[in-house]
Amino acid sequence: MTTPNPRDTDVADVADVTDDTETTGGPSGGPGATALSGPRESVLSRPYRALSVGITTVVLLIAFEATAVGTAMPVAARELDGVSVYAFAFSGYFTTSLFGMVLSGQWSDRRGPLGPVTTGIAAFAVGLLLSGTAATMWMFILGRAVQGLGGGLVIVGLYVVVGRAYPEHLRPAIMAAFAASWVLPSVMGPLAAGAVTEHIGWRWVFLGTPLLVALPLALALPQIRRRAAGPVEGATGKGAAGAGGSGGRGSGRARTSFDGRRIRLALAISLGAGLLQYAAQDLRWLSLVPGVAGAALLVPAVRGLLPRGTYRAARGLPSVVLLRGVAAGSFIAAESFVPLMLVTQRGLSPTLAGLSLAAGGGTWALGSWLQSRPRVEPYRETLMTVGMVLVAAAIAAAPSVLIESVPVWIVAVAWGFGCFGMGLVIASTSVLLLKLSAPSEAGTNSAALQISDGLSNVMLLAVGGAAFAALGGGTVAHAATESSGGSPGAFAAVFLPMAGVALIGAWVTRRLRTA
Image (cartoon, rainbow, N blue to C red; front, top):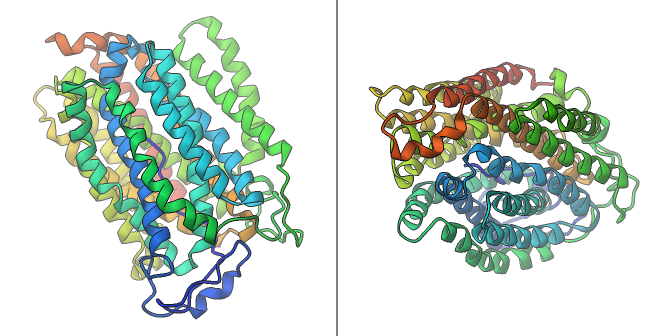
């Protein structure tokens, strides 16, 4: 699962009375309406059914892309002579998605989520086409960057859609439905992508995916226009992400202008992350120049876009945002190298390497479902601690297959447990964020959570990519045809530090309560 995925939502604005009664809808509904909901109400009740199917289909599309691209990536990088910059193919996505997230939060709060969702899906498709037709690795990375911009727009826009259209008690269920939509792609995606890569060519993994765009557009956009369009009353653009608070009083009327300062900070964070990623991959003294410039841009931008106290794990919202980044960054940075390790070090085909991650879709969905049960609510923080320990253990176990005597199925088993832990943690961070968000800050707080997610992915991929390159990772391009199999130490240098980062996340879970 190499693409950030919308498994969670933000603040509710509407409610329903029974299965047979439409909600009042609209962007300015009241958060207290959930008390009127009937006992039979669910995300598939008649008022919510079309919207639930539509937005879940969008997630399904993203899930198929994520699992398919991860399987095809080792072959694409080798054919384009780009294994030495392999990490850029992933971090390029996350770097541009940071800007897309902030832009989408501003756009959604002020004008509604319809625009960012539509534009994001279109950019997502254009990025796939660029990557699929690339003649060089850098053109391939450019396509991934365009795709990332679209993904950032879509994911925050979807959070705002769900926050406006669903009452609070239904949000854990729709998040579980999002997670469940990863099960089929996680099982079938690697099989399909591996078969296409081996028999037709890796390019068709990218060129075929945009054909699926029409269906979610047709299902989701009319419902988004009807139930979640327009600005929220009191959207001031000064949410918790920028001020360190957890709610906002608003101004009493909706604003439609963008916050220029936050847009500039978003550009700075994306450019800074890109420069740091470049510096990490170019292991020369000269690379210190872009590295220092990137840090100079990144540090103030992060301070302006994330809640105050995030990086010292202040209790409450800051620790929720920090945990999201620690969990996602450590897991995604490690997962990005699993197929490459299995193809080059153990000689697996792209199909079998992709299948090593297939069970994770089901266990991730299981973890997300478990956290949505009302009976586990009092134990949410404990479950999140267990989840992070499982993530750390899975990452630490993965490089054991570098030892020839260790069976390769160990990776599949370990990743299944790791994904279960991620299901517990990722969905729960969103549930906790909901309790700290006001309707007028749905987009801003969602963007803060996703910035932490995406920025951690970029930074930890940069660290992992630098260690991989420094220890001879570029030589693995020939590993598929050599019995000796490349540079095992380069992979260990990626996985073991990420396991340590995940253990830090286990400590952060003890800082989530405000009192």
